Image 1 (cartoon, rainbow, N blue to C red):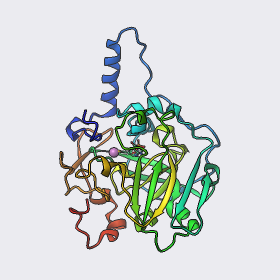
Image 2: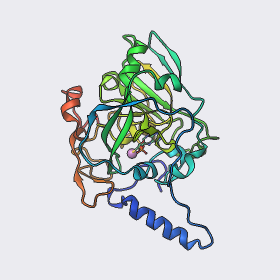
Image 3: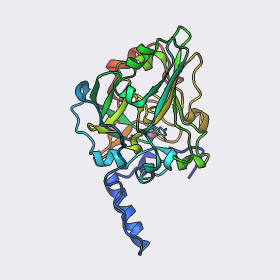
Length: 312
Ligand SMILES: Nc1nc2c(c(=O)[nH]1)N[C@H]1C(S)=C(S)[C@@H](COP(=O)(O)O)O[C@H]1N2
Ligand SMILES: [Mo]
């Protein structure tokens, strides 16, 4: 495995989770004495308070939702290992209470938010979004959260705030994958201010009406449905308003492969594979990948006049 380029699986190698789990079981069976663990049967649902009431949101796709089991057992969360089943197997060590998120930088109202206060900052709603990983697989996921702009509004960014930086927890004791320098920890992502303010950009605390399981980024994560999955940073501890474009973890790891924008774009291939198609988890035939992951009508204006091949 090339650890400098972690999302390194060519699309042809992407295995549907059911096949993958069977294969896992088979391999584990070869280890004879080892009892077969029920991989991710429940997942690690966060302890602590329950979600406040959730209303049906404005962006609910008609597409069939990917089963909860797949959404919670086939994950990318390198802080717990680089295998798809590592997060479900190992994220139990993450403690999600107490939890705080510092919101700071070029703002009038910096604040250290307690997670319980964040959960009640704005009405929670269900959003069913298409999600597309840069590796070439996709899912349709029911999130629970509120638009990031609700938090931004209360934070009052100043004129110097041009970008927003999102930072994941850095604690190798809770996140054993951070003991290896797979990435330059902590995981950092970024959005341009107008992308962060877009009504589709979500702060998510739940999945399928329940608290986020640890492996999906508990207790709070970003969800940006028109961008490749890695922009949606998990287990956030800081949100910073900054003047300069943030140095994201993936750009630092492989700048020629992962650009700042990372908009889903079937016309811009990854240097090592085509991005024209994707496998929806649970389906056999590949689908055509859609520009901006199918959200062009809502987001294309953000990029008008930009060369999307250069700003990939
Ligand atoms: N902190 C952190 N956030 C992360 C990742 C990660 O490794 N660490 N992986 C990203 C990638 S590559 C994808 S595809 C999505 C997967 O989210 P899911 O496991 O909830 O489907 O999380 C993104 N957020
Ligand atoms: Mo991804």
